[in-house]
Amino acid sequence: MPRATIPDRANVILDQARAIVLEKGYQHTTIAEIARRAGVGKGAVYLDFPSKEALLEALLVRSARALTQAVRDRVDSSAQPVSLSAVYRFGLEALLGDELMLACYLADDGALGGYLREKGPQRYRPRMEWLSDYVAELSRAGLLRADLDPAAASLVMSVFAVGLANASATVGALSGEQLSRAVESMAGLVAAGWEVGGDGDPAAAHRAHSRLLDLLADQIGEA
Image 1: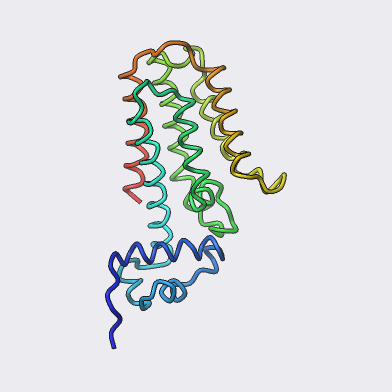
Image 2: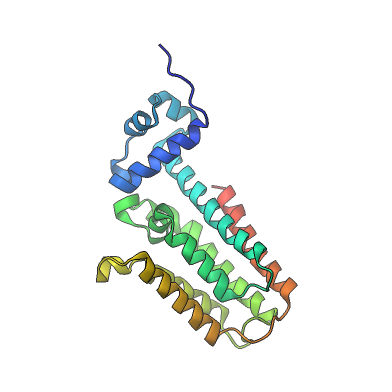
């Protein structure tokens, strides 16, 4: 007897694949187990995803889109000009809240089995450059110090994000509250050391936020 059709089959498959990758790691994840947990045949998985690699790509794209949209929603819903420290906090909070994106960001061998060592540079190097351009735009908009080095600032923020996310492996398990406090502290340092008083040019700042998020969305859409 043929299996009953599952509504939104692709997302059901992705949900189960995500759970298995986080539980066992990408290398130990099989299409057979994904199919079994999703309640479909292996052939149905291949109808939506031609390979295990394609399935992982789809998982990462789905999480990245959700993260980018979460930041955009918070920026767009603000009645006041949104500062660099606020956007940085929005992004880190969204990243820390998604286990798969966290593993992707850190190229975590336990979850992704070295997959990002091959795929990562072509995807993440451009983002460092975009962040540097974004900082420069916010400086021109009057929200950041005019003498701030955009490349150095983008590196500082990126290194902190990686270090924070990887801290548990070095110092032991950290609670969500501890991570949140660290994010707030870093955002406070950015605000105190880099940002200037006043609203600057709110329209230019919003264009800078939107341009960065659009670049991320376009890159994700190409995956």
